[in-house]
Structures are given as C-alpha cells and as structure tokens.
Image 1 (tube, rainbow, N blue to C red):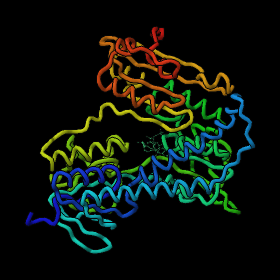
Image 2 (image 1 turned 45 degrees about the vertical axis):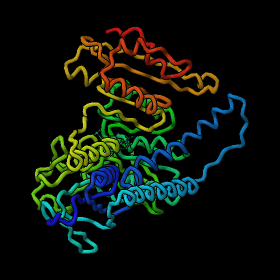
Image 3 (image 1 turned 180 degrees about the vertical axis):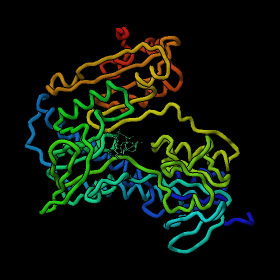
Image 4 (image 1 turned 135 degrees about the horizontal axis):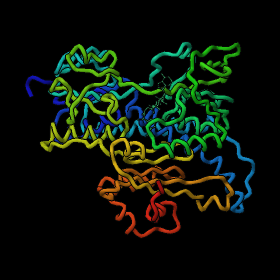
Length: 455
Ligand code: NDP
C-alpha cells in the first residue's frame, strides 16, 4: 500500500457507511471514515429510531383509554413534551456513541469533518485541509429533506430534521405531503394532542401502496382526528403577526398553524461533494448512478444507501454496504437483491407490506387470486375501540406463489418481517394453508384464508 494512505475512505458514517467500514476493516483493509454531522446518520440521529420512540409515546394515549374496559381506573393522564423530547435525544446520543465505539473497535479511523472528492482516489477534508489518497472511495452520504420545487415561504416550515427538537408542543400543525414521513408524524402528533391537518396534492395518500391499504389508512387517520385535505397543492406559506404560519392551497380556505412540517420527499445528498467534477455520473435527482455491485462510473468509487436512490431504506443501505465490503475486500463477491424488500409505515394503525400490491401485480400481467381478511382485533372487543385489522394476500393464479402480503393494523410491521421470509423463499398459498394457525393471534388469519375474493 505504497501509493495510498488508506485502502478505503468512506464518506458518511450512517447505516450503510458504518457497516461497510467495519466489514472492510475486518477483512484487513485500512479504513478511514468521515462524518460532518453526528455519527449514526439519518436513521439513528434524525429518522427511524427517534421517530419510532415518538410513535411509542403517542400510542400510550389509546392504551390508557383501552385500559378502562379491562377494569383499570387511571388518573387523567397528561403528557409532557420536553420529557419525551429529551429522553429521545439522550437515547440518540447513546446510540451514536455505540456507533462510534463500533467503528473504533474495528480500528476505523474517524474524521469528524466534511469530505469532498477531489479525484478517483483522493478526498480532501474541508475543515482540516487534510488530503487522503484512497484505493477505494465509498460514498454513503444518504439524503436530505427536499423542499424542491420550493414553495414560496417554504422556509417558514420545518423538515423532519427539526421536528425532533421543537421547543414546545404546538397546538396546531400542518403537514405538507402524503408519504411515509408526513403520515407517520401526523399520526403520532395527533395522539400527543396536536390538531393536525395534512395538505397533500394527490387524491389519496401513500402513492405506490396497495389501494385497499391506502383507503383504509386514509379512513383511520381521519377517524383519529386528522384533517386530510387532499388535492391541495400548497402555493405559499406566510408568516402571521404573532408567529403563526398560514398555508394557502390552490383551492379552499387558507389554514393556520404554529408549525408547518414539509415532508415532500428526500433527495440524494451529493451537492458540493465533488463527484461530478471527479467524473462520477449522477442521475436526474443528483443520485450516484451505480451498477448492481454499487460501483459508480469511476471504478474506484462506489456508493451505497439513499445517495444512490435505489430502495431508500436503512436495512437496504446496510446490506449494500456489507456486500460492497465483502466483494471488494473480502474476496467474497455478492450483491443485494432489491426485488423483495419488506417495509412498514409506522402510522397508527401501522402498515406492513412485502411484494407486489394488487394493482401492481395486475399491471405486471399476472392473473391473480386475492385473499382478504378484515376483522376486529380481540383486544378491541372489550376495550370498545373502533379498530380493524385488514390483511391481503396477492397470489399468482398460475403458480400459486404469494406475490405480495399487505397488512394494516396493530403490529403489522412485526408480522410482515416474519412473513417476508416465507415470501422471499417463494412460498405458495398452499404453503400458507398447510401452516397451522397460532391461536389466538391476529397473524393466524394469514394462514386461514380459504376463499379467494370473487371477481
Ligand atoms: P415520500 O416519497 O414517501 O413522500 C413524499 C410525499 O410528498 C408524497 O406524498 C408526494 O406526493 C409529496 N410531494 C412530493 N413532491 C411534492 C411537491 N413538490 N409538492 C407537494 N407534494 C409533494 O417521501 P418522504 O419524505 O415521506 O420519505 C422519504 C423516504 O424515506 C421514503 O420514500 C422512504 O423510502 C423513507 N422512509 C421510510 C420510512 C419507513 O420505512 N417507515 C419512514 C420514513 C421515511 P405524490 O405522491 O403526489 O408524489
């Protein structure tokens, strides 16, 4: 290693970059990693982890109410935002520390600095001015919340980055967007006592999900007290005297709130990274264009995770980072299969999904048998809560293979993770049928659906 300072320089210590750094080091490579923000990346610091903790907090609201039907008498519960906010911040700090320890333990050199690519094998650290020559560079810089195209006055809104640090719980909140982030925060803040209005340009939420799931979630969110204004393109946001914000939609009355969360998607984080100048091909959203092995148009530069805009989920980034490190440094080449990735939306009710939705499967030319179960969960019989669980199996009529499973309701995320194993293995409906039910559970309905939906 005479020509290079390190075998691998990783830009970004999030999920994908950290995994790649540790695995490469384990294969004997000398590795340096740069992070300009906090170690841990979006998922740990300002995404999945703090969000899920907020979701847990929000669900107590209904647990307290449900307890009454089971004989519990509780004093009127009250909620303190600062207690939650600071507890979550402390947990994030703990996890970020664990990520750092993991890197240090793996003998990865850490630079808390912004790295800029200066050539196929060189990186400059912006603050220290240090230049590192690296045999391989891995770009794992993730994404950032996009306000693009900009809404006039959009700077009066906040993104999911800031929502974790609100100084106080607002009385009213507007949420712009109808995707994962918009709906997860709408769903949790309404349960913390905030009046939430979702302003979404489309005629239904969660584009791309199975239609029956979308419709049921829409109804459930409205039932939880969220005002959904669909077909509402926000034209501008203005600041009112006293600090409130007013959003103007193309149609309908303007609407005011103390906080506007703009959740209109995320973009690959490549701005100012020097990639285009170094000859790395970027796609229309600025994503690093990579092949199945995560290699960019410059052979010594690879990229994993959201910066490549493939399947923008943490476990996918981790898998891509692992595959890269094994392939390049471990002599064990393998690639990530992006074709079947389970995901959950942590609204309440929760969504768990894997594989093709019914409409997607039809569009792909499959002849289908569709099985559905809709029922009231056992707990709701006594709590009296108006709550349903819905499950759908999308089955290829020709081969009997289960192409997709879609669940909305309590624990959908937990259930779908286990079902995803079967679907990944190519399970058929007959395999589901020969599986003996676990009773009493909600998930047992997955193996007791006997009759395909008519039509
Ligand atoms: P999404 O792509 O899920 O949703 C973006 C939403 O914003 C859509 O409803 C979209 O509408 C709308 N939108 C896009 N552009 C505009 C615009 N110019 N004006 C008005 N509305 C607009 O992005 P998110 O930011 O919610 O999440 C980003 C990604 O992060 C997700 O795709 C997911 O991969 C990941 N994520 C995963 C989570 C999980 O696994 N639980 C949780 C959170 C994030 P339309 O449908 O009309 O395009």
